[in-house]
Image (cartoon, rainbow over all chains, first blue to last red; front, side, top):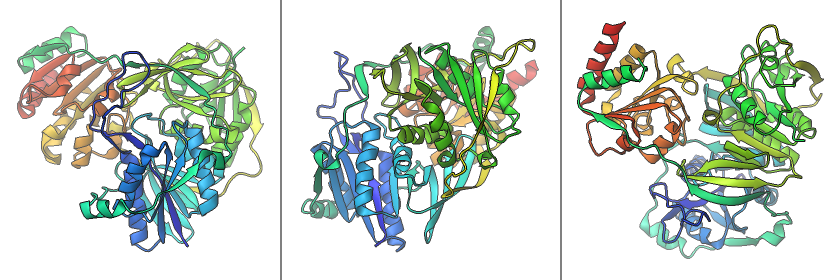
Length: 248
Length: 319
């Protein structure tokens, strides 16, 4: 069976304007709308499309975190994932997310692991290449196109210099960039059906990993924002201001 | 005493300016800074790395398989060098973000992404939530620390004067066996104006306000008149006015030019995080309530298709 494993993370919805707690303890998440990390949604969509083209047989979706992520796993099931696995490891550092995924990779033996290129909360962009490194398999980060042919894949990836194309042997890890695809919308009847689908929970003890954090968060502060300057009323004034600042 | 290894970024011929920025960050951690350079045996960029001020030694891992920066191949020999250091740094761009987490996994340690300030050798700041919040983090001193560097937060170190002795270059053989499961096929380079966004002194960025690709040519014309690089908002890229690699913001490029002209850009928070370190931000938009004005040093409410041609004319009349 050709399986695709997709990792998804529960994050603050991209449209929410976050508020940093006054005591420096972190970002206030009470009553805030949570969603599947947008890049992970793209990864899931790609997995579903690959299965729909019959290049894979099953899409397994996994989330690593507290049981709150069941909500996002259900959404993934409603979107079309075949199975959902929750690994119960609250607030993991990326290395431990990669270790937890590796545990699942060893159990499921997938052809391809698809992840988002980064999560929009931590902005780390580490899990994909870390998993590939631990697994000793290929990685193709920031993918904008994936073409699977038998036991290899040709992946175009967005790099600062342009578009780089890699050929990788499978199994491997591919992380999704913004323009890999446009994810489908979840349909209400599917969402209702997904409520009754099972979600497998794996306890962190089963993983046998040392989850002691390496990084201690001292505080979270609001980032200094740029402050508004002056308004000009026409192009000539704008030009004069630029000259004044020695910019022209 | 902390010892820092900086991973060099290059295209064999020239050293990427990102490396000199990483060296600046490294020097804030310790005066002991070496550079690891994996590339071809005759790569000219090695000399440029050895000429950077503050660099003690360059470890040149030379092999013909390092012609292209493929993380799966570069990670094993570079990770093998890491054991002699307390810190390993790489650029927080698509090169470093591809390579360093893989190296960290091979060394069985975690990693920090895009550190923006060094408070102490084991205490750092970094932005999270699209630049809306900043975290202060402390790290175990007994573990190797790997981190990518937010490039716009550190000025590049200078090149040593010609009469100064460059850093010693040590040639290190590459391992005989390297992965063959990942093969470079090609790189389609982006056009000139988008390639240098990260280091451009001036940037003109256009948004959805241009209406269509034809309208967006006006942004291109202003960029030409200003000798500026051309950037774009996500909306402009999604609408097909501009290519992906021109996107500025959380998921695109982080830039820090002296002058950033945002034309027809509404100013989503994801865009603003990409221009946090810019010098002067100019906003031109016909919507007086656009959030870009809150981040702009100079704002002009007006029609792009009137303002930009006037501005181009004024600039060209001066030349």
